[in-house]
Image 1: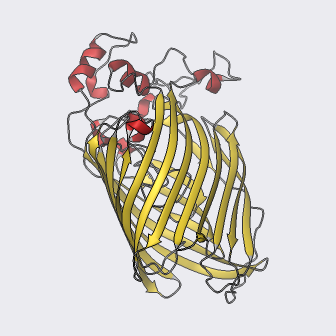
Image 2: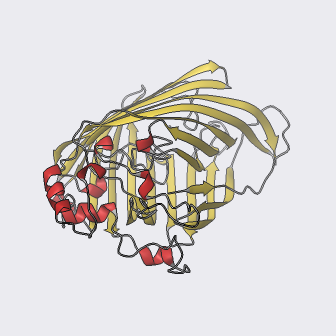
Image 3: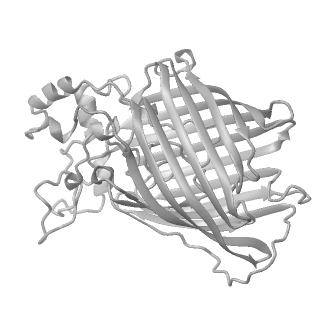
Length: 454
């Protein structure tokens, strides 16, 4: 799936280096965002980030934060999201609430267990050679399905004593609606004689998995997940948006009981360790993150296996592994399993600080390496899938080796760099480009969004 993305800023600042000024009251950053994807079309809309600094005594920390995004793609996918977080709404407790609806008409699906599922790039390569597609071409959306997500997420954090230890709790209600790819939507306006017209009779990988029974009929259309989360964390960061020192670690368990509407009862354990080191005061730092997550009991619906559980949501989505919030440079959702481990390491340099429109800005770069792998695989009946392929279900001779291999996963690695533009330390526009080091994980991916990865 090819992606070209860019963002239009309403301001092009003239840079003048100056001392930073403490901010007070409500401050906001607003951007019109335009992106483009071959399969989803143009995205247009707006995002607003509001911060209440009060009398400025805790700056660059804030009293209240509100984030609002409303954007849509010309092919129909959308992000509608409002998020609020504060340490001061409930006395002694940090509260964060997120309400989102995110329909996605081309949600990436590459199977399970990392390298245990084979990725065939040539099947999706729709580049024309002498006006014709490659004989190996199937569909540029072969590794895609339809998924709509509704999410209402509440997270609570409170101090344990007078040190840096905290308790964490959360309640999330999510609805996943899953279906086959809506090919007619992507063919809208195209001539059936166009070589890039998607064949309505060409199945996707999701259809193979569903028809072969790897994805059960009960799960194939999605469902509700009500998760109850509890854990502890340690947080000695000097600030939240881009820490220069400290540790932020957390561990906990999320349980989704069937009596609250989930497809089945299951539980997951998660652990995350993040640490930050100052190399040059105010300007240069090194940060790394280690994460581990695994299923400790029950059967997890396939559409929830990719969720990365954390005590605090840092963006519109927390899932993968692979993509802008986990392993940058890998195909989105490339590494999915019953359990997985991941690591990120990056050097962060705040190169230039300046004042513009009465606000504090800095321009920064980051250089990173990301890695992850499946540690506990999803149970996939390879023999049953092979038997299914032998029936020639879609009138195409098939080989099992094109889909599944019986092997343990090995590390998936990517590296890259990024650019950051930050206003008042907290409103951070981020652009990252990452390259996968193995062809089975894709090639190069480009992301534009908000905030540092962790």
